Image (cartoon, rainbow, N blue to C red; front, side):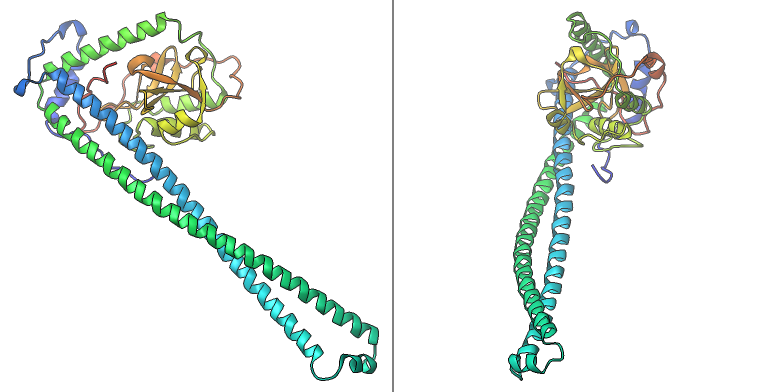
Length: 387
């Protein structure tokens, strides 16, 4: 999406959140913290379940807004194009009408006053005079036909321009409505994040442990099923896209951002493939709808993994069962297990490309070593959505 969006992440209780991040680095065995209930009878798990539901809703609303804004840019470009065509049609019509008028005046001057028969008798070259009159008449008829065609072209261009402007107005209205829906979800998300900011480091740590355990279980199940198939080499474009995405590790998540300082999920994947020389649609839903589907057992690095039933999250496959993703507010671009979220399917931006010969896979362990700390004011990581 063009332009910068306001970062909608929780800034309250930064000290508590940074302490929680420090605790997350301790060994898992030392972090078995019981989960006390919260005031009002809601457990921390319930609060975080609400948070993750709102993350998905916010991501869905943001992707929907990004899609409408993308279409708005297309509508604006189309309106400018047809307006330019209309201007050219009117200019051509004006020039042809002027030329037709000059020919008509010349014809009129030739047929007024003295009789044409007398003019032929008095002409020094009667044949030339006869031929000249014939040519002028023919040109006048051709110019009249041209004017008629141009009038039809002008009417058609005018109708196209009016329809394009009407479509632009409708798209402006839709985009504004989607923006309001997105902002409404983000306001509700802020309420939950402010509540989470009041939780203790121990509570957040216990939940982070639970998330890791659930992700590990889902990953083990997926790998054991054989669904991923054998390792494959990427295409040259896929390799470039993957290397670009890996180069963004540690950069912060930001709603609607598409780099280079920060990203949302589809901002990262679209920018990576643009860098590879193969532009793809901007949003995860467009990527799922427009790109070629590929089964999981045929995955190769650079393919896109799309998540959730409504295709509201996307990541770039890195090989060895891992993806590069911009996960959510508070978490930077990182390497994650492919099963960190419920998989909808996979798509390939370059289905006809041959794999790189003698491909040497990236060292994912080295790529995932320390990433820059999140900026001040960004909350500590929260668990992903439950499957």
